[in-house]
Length: 338
Ligand code: ADP
Ligand code: TRP
Image (tube, rainbow, N blue to C red):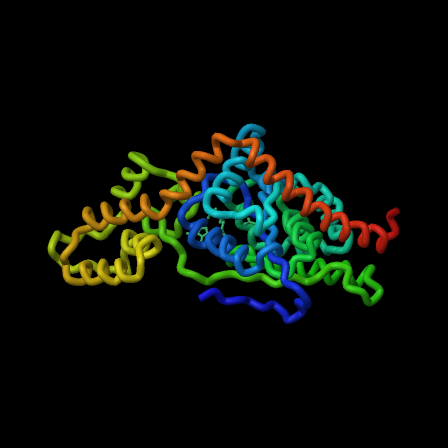
């Protein structure tokens, strides 16, 4: 199912996986089934070679609230650990604990034309949404490139919206290698890997997204979750009439959390008019509760042991920083900075 998008075949040697998570709001089912699940699978495919970090420097382009940034960073850490990130298999850290990335971003800035940054689709889209057009927002891709290149990552799992940023990263690595490499590859060119899986629909049937206010949080439960599920927008079809499983949000969400057999059975009931939306919603709710029960429990326990969470992040940063320093030292030497 997962399709690897090779932007070129230049990756050589051992794969190193890296991805950043923006702590920009409560994680929702779209994030989980569209991104997080793949991240977590990769730690089993490439044990010891996965680097995941919370991109809190990046979040500063949209969050100007000290407490909020702090809270969201911690929440992202709790969420990922509760969902199964294994610190024995993957290196998990805060972006800001490796400030060397800012220095590499500066190096990249000096070889990158402004015109490249001005082509940024994500930049234009964010400005259109009313996010202040700061220099930080425009140069966001420089920092993201530094994030990837400083660890010499080869494989970057991202959503489709981030693919342009990976292309920019490759361009920037090329500019830098050309300017300073003297035939040597100072910075390895990464490849984007994205799963073109279906978009997870939100409460109103549009793509689930925090910007549309139609999300179901991964860790929502009890009454608030029930209220949301029961409020999912459905077609108005009288009870007993057949329902179309391929054009229905309740079914689209159900199939994500039910087994293939249960999904096939539900499809039959839809087609035969043997179920109404009210009942389907109840069954979806039960499946959501079942699917995330363990993760919720783990999150509760972790939230009571924040020292352990801090320890994991600090330990991760130590490992990541070692790699980052190696790359940065070589780059400093190449540009003539002692
Ligand atoms: P949002 O749209 O809520 O702002 P983000 O852009 O922060 O979400 O998404 C983070 C990751 O989650 C991206 O890799 C994106 O592809 C994935 N993702 C977000 N929403 C969905 C969705 N509805 N369906 C599938 N994947 C999604
Ligand atoms: N820009 C990414 C997003 O919004 C987050 C991110 C920051 C990232 N640095 C990264 C992703 C490096 C992959 C690699 O989702």
